[in-house]
Each structure stands twice: as structure tokens, then as C-alpha cells.
Image (cartoon, rainbow, N blue to C red):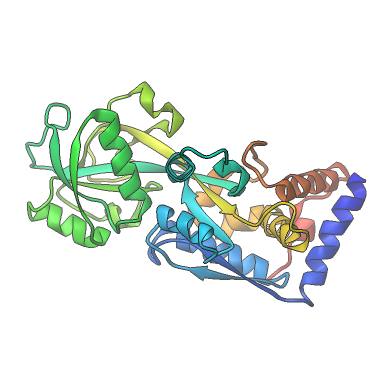
Length: 314
């Protein structure tokens, strides 16, 4: 059965080249990592006849809502947004978000950048009220900002603009802080001057949402010390249900295509691919088609082959 499953998935990839299927992948800002990662996924799936239209968006929360509204079949978002959606949207119901939105692949960690100007006298530990820029209203950064405010008992007043505008307003003294949740080093921040990062003291409340992380001068030349912060996992997910037959098989095809192109993505793609555990899964949240994909790939490996054997060249 395991061998048959592997053959079925491989045959599906080859047959897909003759039968094109159009699906959508909601990403993020066109200048951001989500968008580039999504474009690289789409480039590989296009080769097997699965055409993923990459859609820009405001970010994680908007992407989850798009899944619920059937405005996309796949989306990338932060896990803190997933947890918060589970709490807010399923409150007082017998349903569980894990039964409806399933993870296709865990991706990389993103770090919470709590940014102030270098000459600002702001003291995050003792002060309570802050005017904060966090990007578009439905971005993952704004959601992270809300969680941080809750963790530390702070009052944030939000200003929703682009990240570039937020940083300009910060330097002009119009904002106290800017929150950006993104994988380090973020290109937008790398060439900045006059900035500093606020250290986030460790708190046990964060364990459900985040991992402990740090940002150092190796990430940003303008930083003069290592700063404690939190990291949050981003994931590729879908609302295609597991019992939907062919549609469910397409989820497995997307995963398997990414899986067999691991080497190429790490070598030629965004640097964040090097942080992805390609065969990782969580039985409570992972789509069943993904488990089949991993099983098929393990069979292939047991016969001495690897993803490079199946990957289709450009």
C-alpha cells in the first residue's frame, strides 16, 4: 500500500502537467517574505500543472479571513493569528479551528521587532501608554502588537499605515513605537539609521503563542547589543476539507511538490527556506493529504531515491 501510494502521488504530479488546475494562494505585502515565498512555491507547482495565483494581502489576519470567505484556497499566516482566530471565532461553539483550517507545511520563524528611535527616552518597562505603528490593520504585526500589549499590561493606540510610513513617523516623533513581525534580517530595516530595538522581558504567558528568540548586531548593523524578543512560526495552510476527494489530493500535490524541491528552494530561493523543516508535521493540525505525502516521500527515500530524482527542472 505504501509503495502504491508513492506511485499514485508521482503519477499525479506527471499527469498534472497535462491537466492544469487553477488555485489561489494568499500571501502578504508584495515587498515582504510571504509574497516571495509564495511566488517560489507557485513557480514549482506550475511545472506540474497546478497554477497557484499568488495574491497580495494585508497580512496574517486578512489571510485567515480570506480562507473563511472562500477568497483563497491556500494562505500563509502566523500561528499567533491562528490561535487568536480559534479563540475569537469559535467562542461558545463546539467547533475547533483545527478541524477546518489545516496546516500544509510549517515554514520559518518570524521575530517580533519592537522598534523605537535611538535617542528616545522611552522606557517600555515602566511606561504604560504608547502610540504604535504596526502596518495595515489586518496585518500579523498588528495582531502581535495586541498580544504584546496584553502580555505586559500596556495600552497601545494604533496608527495603521505602511511600514515605511510608520518608520518615517517614528523618526519624526509622531509615534512611540513600531511593531513589525517578520523574519530577521528584514530588508526594510537593514539599511535604516537612528533606530533601536526594545527588549521584551521573558514571560510565561508567551509560551502558548511564541518561542523565545533574540535579535543581534549580526542581523542589523545599527544594533549595538543582543535584544531578547519572541519568535512566531508561520505556516502554509488550507481550508480544503480532508474528505473532498480530488480537492484533498491537490493539497497533497502542493505539499509533495514543495517537498521534492527542497534542495532547489534552499539553494536558489529566499534564505528563509533554510529554516524550514520540510517533513515536519503536527497530527492535530496537519492535513491528512500531507501525511500521505510525507509517507510517500519516506517510501521513495527507503528505496535510495530523493527529491532531486523527481524534481522537474526549469
